[in-house]
Image (tube, rainbow, N blue to C red; front, side, top):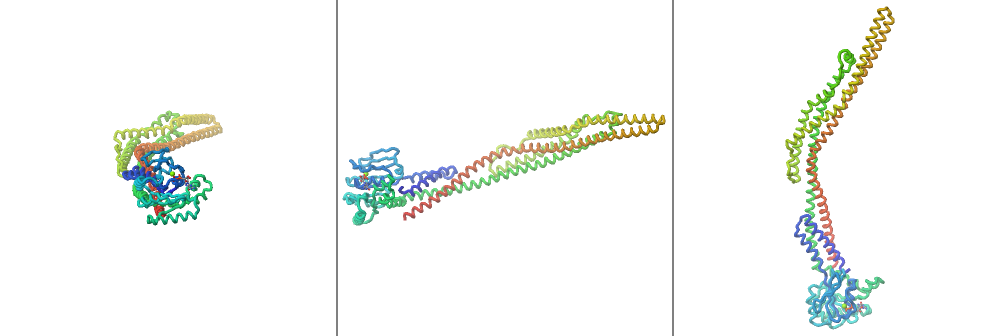
Length: 580
Ligand SMILES: Nc1nc2c(ncn2[C@@H]2O[C@H](COP(=O)(O)OP(=O)(O)O)[C@@H](O)[C@H]2O)c(=O)[nH]1
Ligand SMILES: [Mg+2]
């Protein structure tokens, strides 16, 4: 493709300009400049204008088809009316008469988007027409190609025409010696020499002259058979190189490219700076979030520690009550008391659970009232801290007052006291002293009764025996009675000890259980209270994360664009260097 490097460069630049014009307003940088980018991108698209001039049948159309590899211009037709054909891209093929001498031809071939081709048939037409061609196309022509046929390069009218126009078309004008395959190389060389000489004589300058065979070049491009040989013999390689270099050297176009490039680079640097700072700011904010959250956690931690002290104190109360109750039970659970209860009264443990609970509750309620005061204080402190930190470090003003009112805290107080009460109740209930002790008391009372009966029985019998003088029997009965009594006493004592042990163990277990429940549930209560703050922070953090995703994307995009522009800059310079 003719001018491939330039077109690649241009299309890459256009793509970058376009994406830059989208990114810039997103980042909020210079929307005016972003609009300029769009304009720059579209001006880059101005097509190259190729003017081909020469007598009828010298092979202009064939050459154009070969050069662009598309059969867009009819060949071998001798036109009845000589018209200038202006080839442009069109979705469908159509011809539009502009003037009596000019016709626009729209053809759906891609390269016509980048090249406008003017085919001027026959310089051997009227004077006026020459004038028209000159005036109309000279200012916009990027390259003018004069085509001569090898069979007749000396047509007078062609050289007369050149005489007229060469002043205007000096720049980027080249001569083609077409149909070179119809002559021997020696003949071609001779013709070339003579043409050059003629140019020097007539125009006092030289033009690049290329001997080519468009027929062979077109065959090479279209048939694919023997391609390399045909291409080589066509002489197109040098010609195409010349044209590509001339396109790249087109100062106004390269000027546009350079200008667009530098504008784009300016904007990209701004975008990079801007997105870079934003990324920096965001990191700072993320850090602020972490700090605030940590601080709230440590306030919560401190409240937890204070609560732990209160829980410990409650445990102290519990232990004291437990000790009292156990002491009561110990006193109650002796064989002596069992014995006494047989004779005097029926000992009972009914109501012991309630006694214990009452003892536990009384000091605790007061304690937990003050616990709520501590929590209220800490939460208030946390609320103040959060309000200030959010405004100072995250620049967000909270609309609501985070400090809860008295009503809320009174409700909290009641709630907490109720919960603690409930926990104590549950904990004490589990001990079930009444249930544990009642059967034992009954059992041991029975043992004590048995013990008394044995003692009394054996005493009566021993006395009886002693009265009748049966001393051996007396001794025996006394011994047996004592032994049985001692055995019963021991069994009773053991049973009581066992039950005391169980009661003690239950107390200890109850204490541990209570401690766990309290610690866990109160921590949970606290968590719920402090979570209010997280519910305020969380949406802010999510917003920040959303921003983070967007801004990181923008930053990367700007970075990629900067890289692309640097690459294009290098390419522009390389292209310029090639031309020199
Ligand atoms: N042998 C030979 N014939 C050619 C070459 N180029 C064109 N022709 C023939 O010359 C005739 C005129 O070509 P055309 O492109 O229509 O000339 P135009 O009137 O200048 O556009 C046609 O019959 C072509 O086949 C070439 O390179 N070698
Ligand atoms: Mg033609």
